[in-house]
Amino acid sequence: MTLQYLIFDASDDGEGTGTWDAMASVRAAELPAVMAEVRTVLDWAERHSPGLRGPLDEGGTWDADQQAQTDGGWTTVTLTITGPWEWGEALVAHFTPAD
Image (cartoon, rainbow, N blue to C red):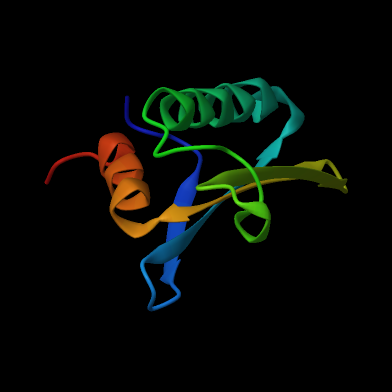
Protein backbone atom coordinates (compact mmCIF):
# COMPACT_ATOMS: atom_id res chain seq x y z
CA MET A 1 0.00 0.00 0.00
CA THR A 2 1.28 3.44 -0.93
CA LEU A 3 0.31 6.20 1.47
CA GLN A 4 -1.75 8.97 -0.10
CA TYR A 5 -1.80 11.44 2.80
CA LEU A 6 0.89 10.74 5.39
CA ILE A 7 4.37 12.01 4.56
CA PHE A 8 7.28 10.78 6.70
CA ASP A 9 10.31 12.75 7.83
CA ALA A 10 13.10 10.83 9.58
CA SER A 11 15.76 11.79 12.09
CA ASP A 12 18.54 9.64 13.54
CA ASP A 13 19.96 10.05 17.05
CA GLY A 14 23.35 8.73 15.91
CA GLU A 15 23.08 5.73 18.23
CA GLY A 16 20.86 3.46 16.15
CA THR A 17 17.49 4.90 17.13
CA GLY A 18 15.34 6.92 14.79
CA THR A 19 12.21 9.01 14.90
CA TRP A 20 9.76 9.11 12.00
CA ASP A 21 7.19 11.89 11.97
CA ALA A 22 4.31 11.61 9.52
CA MET A 23 1.81 14.39 9.03
CA ALA A 24 -1.26 15.14 6.96
CA SER A 25 -3.59 18.16 6.97
CA VAL A 26 -7.00 17.48 5.48
CA ARG A 27 -10.62 18.63 5.36
CA ALA A 28 -13.22 16.64 7.32
CA ALA A 29 -14.22 14.53 4.31
CA GLU A 30 -10.68 13.15 3.98
CA LEU A 31 -10.12 12.48 7.69
CA PRO A 32 -11.40 8.86 7.62
CA ALA A 33 -8.89 8.03 4.87
CA VAL A 34 -6.02 9.58 6.86
CA MET A 35 -7.02 7.68 9.99
CA ALA A 36 -7.15 4.46 7.94
CA GLU A 37 -3.56 5.14 6.85
CA VAL A 38 -2.53 5.70 10.47
CA ARG A 39 -4.12 2.37 11.46
CA THR A 40 -2.42 0.60 8.54
CA VAL A 41 1.01 1.96 9.51
CA LEU A 42 0.49 1.04 13.16
CA ASP A 43 -0.73 -2.44 12.18
CA TRP A 44 2.45 -2.96 10.16
CA ALA A 45 4.56 -1.72 13.06
CA GLU A 46 2.83 -4.16 15.44
CA ARG A 47 3.17 -7.12 13.04
CA HIS A 48 6.87 -6.40 12.43
CA SER A 49 7.60 -5.25 15.96
CA PRO A 50 11.29 -5.26 16.88
CA GLY A 51 10.37 -5.83 20.52
CA LEU A 52 8.29 -4.44 23.34
CA ARG A 53 6.26 -1.33 22.55
CA GLY A 54 6.62 1.42 25.13
CA PRO A 55 8.65 4.50 25.97
CA LEU A 56 12.31 3.86 25.15
CA ASP A 57 13.46 5.37 28.45
CA GLU A 58 11.24 2.83 30.24
CA GLY A 59 12.60 -0.23 28.43
CA GLY A 60 10.50 -0.19 25.27
CA THR A 61 12.05 -1.04 21.94
CA TRP A 62 9.70 1.12 19.91
CA ASP A 63 6.77 3.44 20.49
CA ALA A 64 4.22 5.52 18.60
CA ASP A 65 2.21 8.63 19.36
CA GLN A 66 -0.76 9.94 17.41
CA GLN A 67 -2.16 13.47 17.61
CA ALA A 68 -4.98 15.26 15.81
CA GLN A 69 -5.79 18.96 15.92
CA THR A 70 -8.59 20.78 14.12
CA ASP A 71 -8.32 24.43 13.16
CA GLY A 72 -10.59 26.34 10.78
CA GLY A 73 -12.00 23.36 8.93
CA TRP A 74 -8.67 21.56 8.61
CA THR A 75 -7.50 18.66 10.75
CA THR A 76 -3.80 17.97 11.12
CA VAL A 77 -2.93 14.40 12.03
CA THR A 78 0.57 13.63 13.27
CA LEU A 79 2.01 10.16 13.82
CA THR A 80 5.41 9.84 15.49
CA ILE A 81 7.17 6.49 15.60
CA THR A 82 10.43 5.89 17.46
CA GLY A 83 12.53 2.74 17.34
CA PRO A 84 15.54 0.98 15.85
CA TRP A 85 16.77 2.76 12.74
CA GLU A 86 16.72 -0.24 10.38
CA TRP A 87 13.20 -1.23 11.47
CA GLY A 88 11.81 2.27 10.95
CA GLU A 89 13.46 2.62 7.58
CA ALA A 90 11.89 -0.73 6.57
CA LEU A 91 8.51 0.60 7.72
CA VAL A 92 8.82 3.74 5.60
CA ALA A 93 10.15 1.76 2.61
CA HIS A 94 7.15 -0.56 2.82
CA PHE A 95 4.79 2.38 2.27
CA THR A 96 6.94 4.31 -0.23
CA PRO A 97 6.42 3.66 -3.94
CA ALA A 98 9.38 2.29 -5.87
CA ASP A 99 10.76 4.73 -8.43
